[in-house]
Image (cartoon, rainbow, N blue to C red; front, side, top):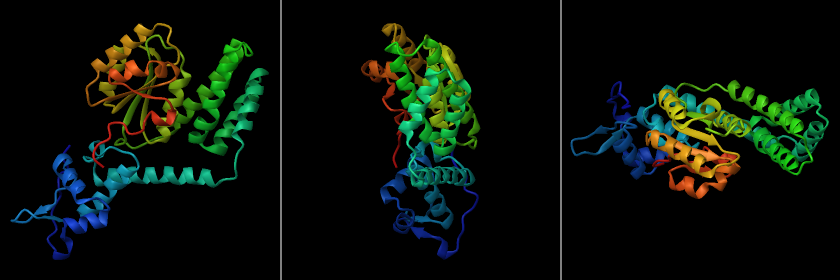
Length: 318
């Protein structure tokens, strides 16, 4: 979407050559030219000789665009946004960084102890105490740290204990269902502006484990995405149709178990083929890691850590 310039100021003090614009915005002159030519991010005044002159409004807008790009957003996604939408996005990104910094400066929380206690409550099938314990952990750490330092390690440990037959299926289901409910509530508690990027989170047909998708959805919400969470076991045709209808930038899938390698790969290839090129596709989970070579060859980015699922997706010139 090309931004329509409302008007051009003509005061001499409101016209700046590209060297001044670069110095004030922190962007190189080459980037300024690319952002104008390829993305129509701003429309500087052109003198008869072709020299660019930037207004104060242009420079203010470029500063916002640079701040949004520095937070990890693609210039291709944000160049068409209004100044108001950009300012709101940058404010949200700033608030998120401040929140993380505040968590980092808080007295250290022994997350290993939190996980150990949660496992003990799981063994005892102490449903209400486990739920309360984990919700207190969210309150103390914030949802981002909870996902990375409590929920993900706890679920890995529970899975290992279940495979070693030191936990029963009922104990494993208890821990998974409580964590899942907490993550879904947290994910839906985040609200972002309509101009924030959208991601569809689901699992492919045959994958019935919801917890990985819930982890991904909660983390995406914290990172500033509007999340369309569809749950588990969806065929490629349904996921693709939903992604196009919702106008998402990214489809993120969780693959935990691979009981039929060719079937899973067939679903993923079918989905990639049905999605427009503009929609990125990424996958995480133990199963995705096992299929990394084949998935990467099919145009699916595989993330081995949850924090990498949404990093550098479709990055453009910065």
